Image (cartoon, rainbow, N blue to C red; front, top):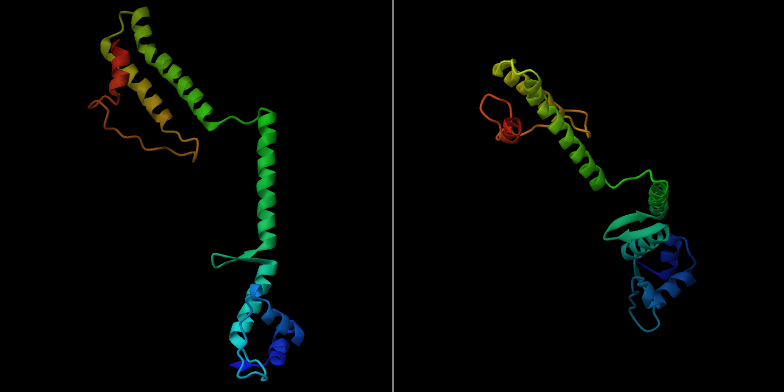
Amino acid sequence: MRLNGRQIAEILGVDENTVSRWAKKPELKFPVAESTGKNTEKAYDVNACVMWWHNRELAKMGGIVDGTIINLQDERARKTKEEADHMALKNNILRQEHSPNALLVDALAAFVGQIVAVVGSIPARLKQRNPNIPAADIEAATQELFKVMDNASKISIYDDGLQDEPESDREEGSGLTETQRAAIDS
């Protein structure tokens, strides 16, 4: 439907001169008015004018980016939160309350490796201190120790549950990995 400038101004809630100014400024991309003659009144497409005005109002509130309406207040709040989080991280680093994950993982891996070595040496120490202990008892103690370590290795720090561990490297029936068996035998 086509209307004149006064009618479009009335629909958009602005002055008729405002519609004329918008139409004269190409950078505003106001829907171009059609004219039927030299001294005739211009006719505007209502749908195109209303859509232009709607997009203009959205741009005032924040805008449209890639077809998505952006709310300026939400974007400001998001940015403020990001800045606060960044500042909190910097403060934690300055107070030495923050450690990089990679450093912690390496430290924990070394610590656990030491625990495994100590626990793995218990059966050999028992055999040294008391040579009369039967080999079957030493083997049973070894298996029980490694079952405990195996269960401990399944504890997840992320979800307080047990992680699945592949059993492809286990010896048949012993519950021990080849590495664990080699540590015992040495």
